[in-house]
Length: 367
Image: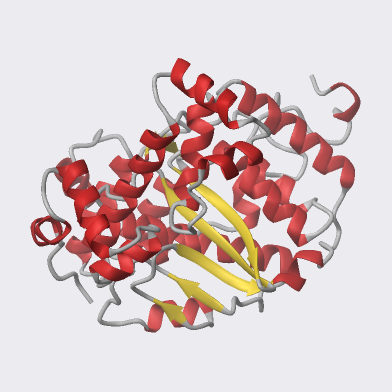
């Protein structure tokens, strides 16, 4: 099945990869879905916390067999709803962190095999950015370098959905564990950014990340020195990397993306970095702007529609989950002034940002 690389990486016919990970039947989740490993990690944490699993699943309106052993991807938003209910039920405001800590490089199956066999940390993170969709089709990973500092970000497609902040801290904990798998268990970022208000007890966050954690931020990200990107990965095997890339390519080919899908992915990470510009995006996609516009029109949309939709989604999440004021949100979404942001938000939603925040701000969480 893998022709020349078949002797290096198992093709999955026996249900296991050459590295021992059981991803033989692994399939890329559909858009808006996430790998069932997240459900299994959530199940383990909730059992440890003594939660009423059946009651939570019923309250979330999910399949009562959700936690049964299985390999089907699950809706990203459904798990967000469940994890939000579970955080309230257990009075554990850092539930997402507990779930994310259970995902390691070694548990990522085929994607983990690719990352740990890249030549350098930078190669691995670029591979993660390009191929995270084989595990998570509910969000995108972004990798940027600014003034010698790497910003490794995670941005959901539906940031305003219930439980998003818990998904975000889950994901950033997983990214931290990936880097510890590549760099050693003592690795720590310079800073961690989270777009949520600070919980009453921040010790679980600083204890896990071993770095300053900045709450009420515009994005979810790890920050660390760019020099780390050049660090070689010990024991990397080019043949195993080639085999993993081949198999991931087959998974991605089974879930083709339109230009609209690809731009939504890019804009979700770019919208808070003031890079939401049609000319710039056209260059990045190796298209001229006219060709891009024509292809998007054929797909029933436009760059302006996609960019505004991304801004609106992020604006709702920042209004609901952070203490950022309107001027800060306006600035991070690249509006010329708060009045322009208010005007745009009213056009998108039919109400003002302040009124929307009052109606959608969640109540106090547990400890």
